[in-house]
Length: 77
Image 1 (cartoon, rainbow, N blue to C red):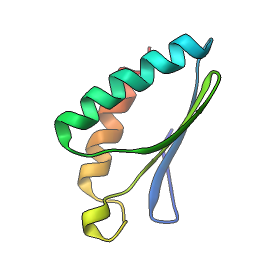
Image 2: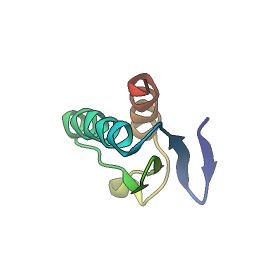
Image 3: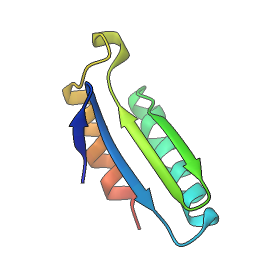
């Protein structure tokens, strides 16, 4: 579940292994690129953490972030 804190949407994802985490990140990257909206994220082994905010709007959460969050949720296998 996404949480909103410090003017960002945040969610942590956990996968079976690094390959699954990396495949997820690849799918997210392609979706984000189509929206011209790119997340701040980290990956360590099977964990991926994502923070979303809109830089053009002053680094606050906008509908663009909520739309990307929904797309990201749909990409979780």
